[in-house]
Length: 253
Image (cartoon, rainbow, N blue to C red; front, side, top):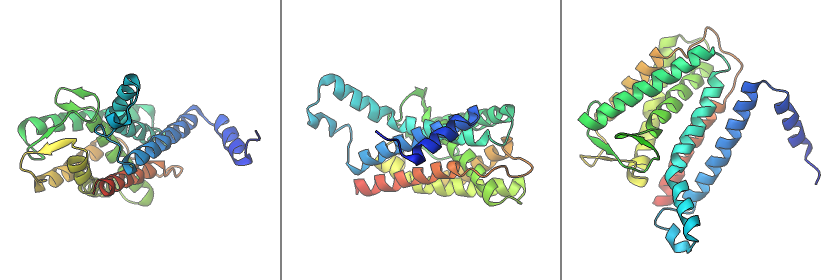
């Protein structure tokens, strides 16, 4: 079989790239493939309740249920890898890992306090539907915070190349809050990742999202003196994530 010229050209370009460029490209394609699988599953209305009706072999049924249970975590994990690899193109390895730790550990601590005390987001409880957990906290949550905060920061940095760090952090916080507003109906009502004790999303949730996003973006050393080579894959991860939310809501309507 003859390999198309475009595919051979892309493969040769990938082979001649740096290890970071190769990793970024591979992470991007894995994310795209996993996203496509997720979109097909959501559009088809596949859920743990529908799989038993397929009359699969018990081992295959168990594997399918495991994929559904871990699928959303892996989606966020692959997206987070793309964002991290994109960030690595314009900062030192030390600053990259420092940023990852500040955002993931910081958000993890606040989220754990939130689910135990109800502050600052409001009273909620995480359900066991997001893959691995550390106590009451699904590991998908700090992974998602890294994806959202770092992803929007990198995107804002490219769209606002002359803006100062505070402006970029404010843009990041506003974008992250809008992202959460779009995500909430899907994550809470459709997927059942968590439950709000009052039966509705409290206003303080969005205020907390804005404040925490701003603080994490401000503390993490993501800023560089000048924009580096444009790489829109971080923005692509965020757009595809929002698309997944919208399709999931439409499919469940």
